[in-house]
Image 1 (cartoon, rainbow, N blue to C red):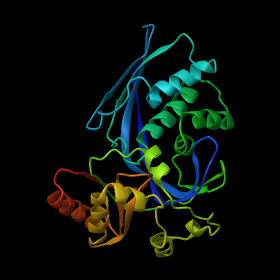
Image 2: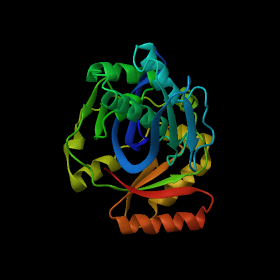
Image 3: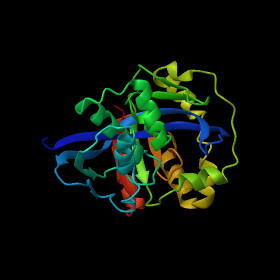
Length: 286
C-alpha cells in the first residue's frame, strides 16, 4: 500500500443555538454549518510493524494527546468492530487547523479516516452504521462525514444535508487560546428554542440578512472568560465589507463573513498589524 494523502476540511458554525443538555453529556444544538478550504493533510500507509505509528506535524501539532486523539479512537473503534484486524498503519496529520479553536479539526480528521478506510479497504460499512461509529468518537464527527452544508435542527440526532452551496469569503482569526468545549458548555447559561424557520433556503443577500440576526449562544461565556476575543470580534466587524463576525463552535476562533475576497484580504492585513501574534487566514466555502 503506497502512501496516500487525503484532505480534512475545517467546519464553520455560521450560528449556534444551545437547546438543552442530553443524558450522554452532549447538548442538542441548532446550527448552520459550512466547510471551507482550510484543511489538514493526512498521510496514510500500511506498515508491517505490530503497532501503528501516529504522528503530527505542522504549525498546530502542539497540545495533542498522542494516546487518546481521534486518530487512535478511529483505529481502536474499527478494530473493536472487527475491521482492520492484523493490519497496522503509519499515519501523519499535518495540522493546519488550529487545535481547540472550534473549527472541528480533530473531528474532521476522524471523519476523513472513517471514510477513507471504509472505501479504500472495502469495509462495506453502511452509511447508517458509519454514522453510529462516528457518534462514538465525537459530536462533530458525524457532521464531518459529508462536506456539505448542514443544518442541525436542534432535535436529537436530526441533521439535514443541504444541496445548495454558500459562496462565502471567510476571515478566520485564532488568538492562540485553546478553548475547552466541556468547560464552555458547562458554564453556559444561554438556552434557545428550536428554530423552525428554514431560512437557509434563502440565497444571497436574504441569507446574509438572516444570518446577521442570528448569534452564537456560547459567545457571551467565551468573551466573559477571554475578553480579548470580544475585542477581536468587534475589530473584525469594523472592517470594510464585513457582514458579521462571531466565534465558531465553542471558540476560540473568530470568523468574519465578507462581501468579497479583496475586503477579506485587506482585513487580514489589518488584523496582522493590530494583532501580530495571532494566526489568521482567508478562506472560501467549498
